[in-house]
Length: 510
Image 1: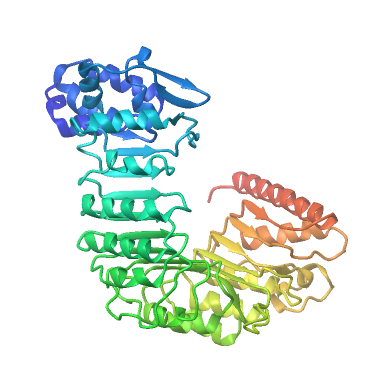
Image 2: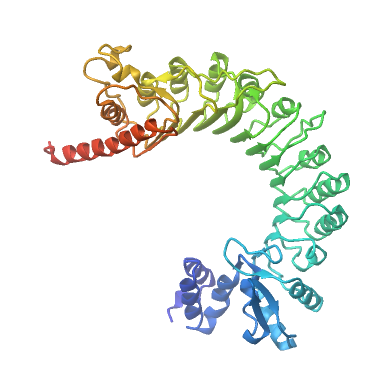
């Protein structure tokens, strides 16, 4: 054996390169059998990731278990030697997935019976199963909650827990057990019923227990105000995902300056702007607020102005009133590379009319103010009567050479609707090629209309390819005959690109 293979670090790198398939596992097993010195590190890699508990349980003797109706059962008691051999395997596990009892997982593995969990819990009292476990993904029913300690170890740094709803008497002890066992968490993803004051307070204590290490929090389906003091007190928090947050009236200005990502999902209440104003501006890069109440776009952008020089990704939905002030504020976010803004239909309670109608001037200004943008999605949820024209696409192709994905409703009448189009650059000879070659590969036009003129589909396809020479994908959302016409445009785009490729290939080399 080559001397380099005696380096454990190199052996682990080689083992990690194997594909996570049955064939890859067989290759690792054969590799481990080559030499006694390879067995340890290779077997560590082979067993370290168990996405489903039933997979490792099937390493028990074949006569000791059965799978009936996709549920794993232990059919007999195991001897001490058999348990000891099983623990040698589990001691190497660092990533473990525990499914809901009597339910199939996404990996088509068997569910685990309650009796099997009870036997495992009894055996765990004689010796720990998971001494190296670092990531636990647990989706369990109430019958398994009393045995949650079977899977908890102080070494866990990433906990993704889904607990059932309906019985808060068991929920609080379960959260308390996690608080006392897992005190070095770095990632915490909870999908539990926090509507009960006792469970929400216990969730706050769980967060506080890992105050010095926790850097990512994801809480569903509700984030009550009692949890926020613990969240605001995390000095290393980098990612925050909250569903239906109930922001308190008094927002602490001491939110972690390390915060990079903030996602707010669902209804957010009246204190959203106050929370956004207090967000740290040093590193914040990814902001997403969606599925909540309709909010004024200019008001929202104004609240985020403190992070205008660091934010690179912006996803806002639903919003109202895309106006000139919104465009000015949006262009002040100079580092933006991805913008996704969707409007909502009017809200009777807030009296926000749906005026999401970006004009050519708006889109042109966005292109000039944000030349490094890569993704631009301006998607009205309703059919707005006023549309941008082909001039907007032409302007973006000239100013945004990095733009790759674009979604916008466009009126193509300016290039096929009359003999004298309404913009000088579109007259007589078709659209003028931009100075820079645009990188755009995906265009979504939604329900954009096409005029009823001869050869309209071919003219639109030719115009799009002339300003976006790398376009490959065209998405649309129409009905009836208009859907068929846009499908023809998509076919014509592919034909135009083939013609361009043949022309370039046949061109003489200077």
